[in-house]
Image (cartoon, rainbow, N blue to C red; front, side, top):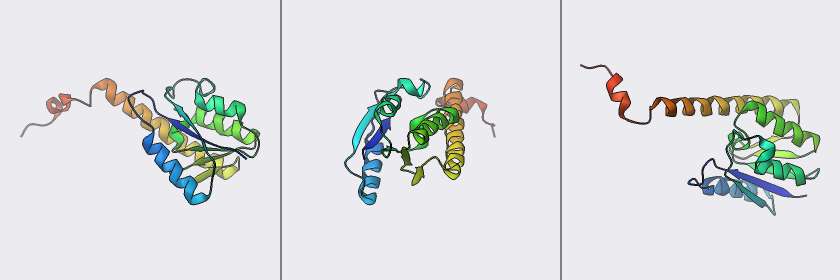
Length: 148
């Protein structure tokens, strides 16, 4: 049985250290070892089969495990997350979502949870993208506030 940790960030300037720490801590507490780490800097918007998670899914075998820090690390939309989890279930692979202490094993309960978390991740990403495009990260908000 093999264990693969998928660590993904969107930009080369970000690092995976927080994800790595969380996953290693989870693995130590749950007796999961050895672990193969996969670091990925591809955007969640890119099809999942063309990212590192796709490479893992190609080589993984029944009974293996994939670990991710958060659902949002797997994909940028609930559809992508569900596709990955569906593929994992077909291959009899468990997907551990470390931050939430969830094990996605293809059951109805794990599919419902994954759908909700994937949708929340997609909404959050869309809000962040929208605020960034509108310039809410700079001083423009000063000009919109009420004056006394």
